Length: 322
Ligand code: NDP
Image (cartoon, rainbow, N blue to C red; front, side):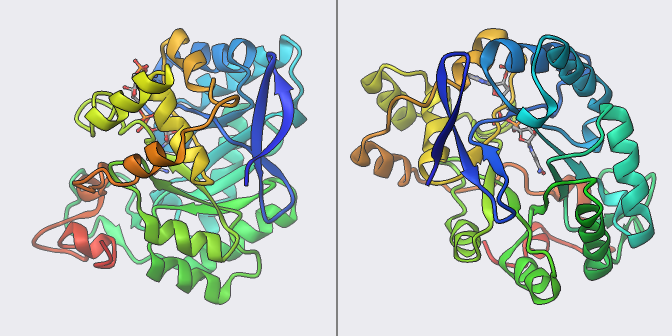
């Protein structure tokens, strides 16, 4: 259930309660591939759009720009405690001794004292300087328990308020739950009507782990064009909303927070105007029935080496669960 908790720019902003007791705003700004324009996008989102939740990662290479945007928004009057900032631990840092230095570097780039959420970006360790696609020896063993223990210490030391994971499978999440002293607050996964991933959503709900839906609009060019999907378009016209708004709202109605990325000020503001209306049940079910379910971000380019392994196929990455 989403709770209406605070008002930003005159609109009722919903949030979800995490296991830790903290709240995560239902809509956040994604910043992947935002580059030097991230500062402007973050300022627009926070100051004009009423966003309070920003999603970034060391790997996006834009943490400094995101940090500048947050700083400007705070100069404009926002308080740090009202913001929810997420970043992610990259694959080259997935060994216990590298976790804390990586977080410290992220805090420095963002010019922040703490993060609201720190996520394991992908459950695969890469050698520094790994190629895309990886060469033999680029994908290394990942000590999940050792890394998670270090994540837990970051939370205990209040450097991060919540810890979590991204791109996990049922197999991997169950393994983590087997030894975790601190259950992940959040699991961030690709989710949109073209890849609903009901199995992971159900497993997370069962364990009270909140899910954040990434690439909610089907990602960028080369992704899945849901903005022009017939069903999405029909429902948008019927509700007098835009396809982007319908896609964001669909995620919230499923109980997930949603992090659409945009660099366009009008679209940034449009994507968060989703709080004073609902998608009727029949239309919600139509979105739940869009055929051709397929991941956009399958990890192939990053982690699959067809001849040398250790992951020779996309199915190997996802533990043959899809
Ligand atoms: P999205 O699904 O958010 O789609 C972004 C694309 O949609 C951009 O091309 C954007 O263009 C366009 N767009 C935005 N709003 C609208 C609109 N209202 N109407 C039409 N087009 C629109 O893609 P992302 O893959 O970026 O996912 C969102 C975020 O999720 C990322 O930025 C990142 O923060 C996170 N993420 C996390 C991953 C992980 O492994 N944990 C993996 C991938 C993403 P324009 O900018 O021109 O508006």
